[in-house]
Amino acid sequence: MKEIKKIKNLSLAKVTAAIYGFMGFLTAIVIAILTMANIIIKEDFSGSVLLIALFNLGMGILIGLVTAVAMAVAGWIIGFLTAAFYNFFAKHLGGLEFELEEKTLRQAARGEIQGKEDKPQTQS
Image (cartoon, rainbow, N blue to C red; front, side, top):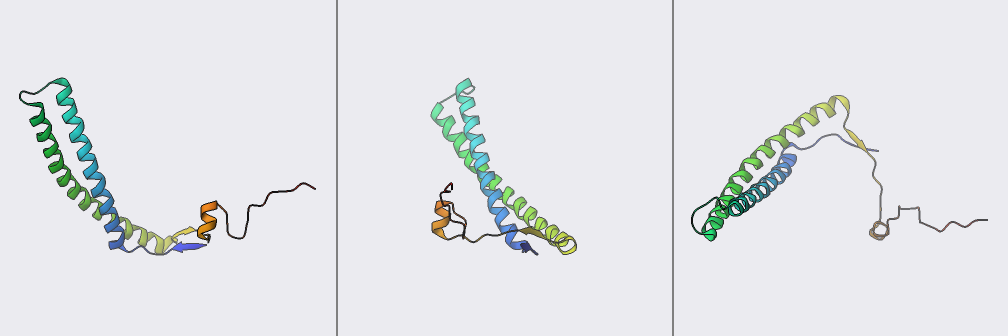
C-alpha cells in the first residue's frame, strides 16, 4: 500500500491552471460558433453573411483568449488551495492510500498481471 503524504502546491496549481485554461478556451470557441450559427440560421442580421461569420469568429477567438486566461488564473488558485487543504488534512488524518501493481509493457499490452499468466484451465 502506498500513501500520498503531500502534494506540492505549485505543481498542482500549474496543472489545474493548464486544464482550466484549455477548457475555458474551448468552451468560448464553441459558444462563439454556436452563436454565429444561430444568427445566420435565424437571419437576424443585416449585411454579408461572410462578414458576420468572420466577425463572430474573431470575437469568439478574442473572448476565448480572455476566458482562457481568466479560467487559468482561477484554476491556478483552485489547484493551489486544493493542495494546501489536502496537505493539511493528510497531515492530521492520513493521506490517500492506493495500491500499485508492476506490469511489463508486454503484459500491459496483453492485459496480464505480473506473475499471473492467463493460462487456459484444463478440466481433470
